[in-house]
Image (cartoon, rainbow over all chains, first blue to last red; front, side):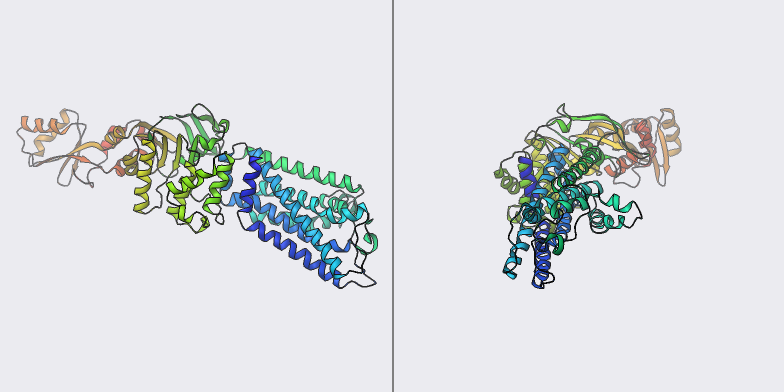
Length: 253
Length: 316
């Protein structure tokens, strides 16, 4: 608990997390407002459509998570940290937990802000959260962001430089996975198992949320059920973090 | 007590620290002296468990750093004053450090007061001058009221006022009975603050002794002789085994005390115009000892004497 408090003080006593949180909210909220306000009979506002922009917000949250550790390397505070807490595994695990919790909170605010704004802009549209799929489609954004943040932080620990780590995380998340589908034959089969595609499956399912199948986000090609998809991505995040922590323990700080 | 045993650190094919063994006694200020790049910072990072030694160990009070419970309460260290997030306030920086070792938040204000930063405690550390950053670093080192303090080049880049402040501060810490281990590349600085010296060059131990001993050994070595009858004095000096170097206006004699030269002059009826012990500056002596080669270690006195060290230096 002490270490969690330490990491919370560290993270929230600098400005970048606040700016990243604000950016994530403005970006997703703004985009959702645009989409929903332009909806019509052909493209009705649906629960799924309110979460169109979640991946933009998630990208910003991953930047936040990467910076949370790379700035420590940049300014040498990681050494002060390891000096105060020589158990590096505990220190970094605590940091990952705090970053994940903050990502969870931002993710939830982001998702419900987008959904709430949509209900205000289109009060007539059927945006009620009636089914489990509806709920996961909105509330699932938080856990998805939390796990994505752990992945980003693990990359940050391994790469240590802000620019390098952020580029790697964003290029992979926003481009590289989709490029795999271009490989003839096997591309689509590989893509089914790539982590962020699987994570998207957790949020959208097979489009069971209201309007999800026809008027919602593009669906994931993963064949896992939503909960297995979440477990798969969580496993990926934990393994990556474990590799990062093992590396950090062996390395000179 | 800090104890290093056969401490070795290799980066690629470069040996930064080479089989270094020394002890730092409790309750004294021990200087860690060596030219830039001698391996001082690497050694200190290994003391704090930040860098892993390639081989050998270093213990503080018999324990490796990683084995210390709440280490900030045993060892306070300032290795680099810039290890602070520039957008974090001084108080926030100390607060998380205090929290991590279960140190009371009151202590944060106490140490800020000790180093004189109370008024700027909530300002961002990025706007601090080097002197202020150094004070913040010292505040961090004092946070856990530790028995052992490590400082790496604390006066580097400071103005005279800052240097004086740090110097007095170290002495105060030692007076309180703490163990202070402070590195520097300036012997003159160490001569003023440290009672013991661990001297290294190229990662190897050159000497461990009291500061007094080291300074005496390093500087008190030659005597300048001026006389109109050098032709008679010189053979007499050679006979007693002195090392003699001719200079523009006389001789530099090493290996024989001034008194003995005076007696020899008397015996040989030589008139002396000058008989002056030469003391090189501390820096010159230190450079000779740690210079390009650590081989000076083997024959410290003769080597130092052969160099016309006193020639350009101030005559005492």
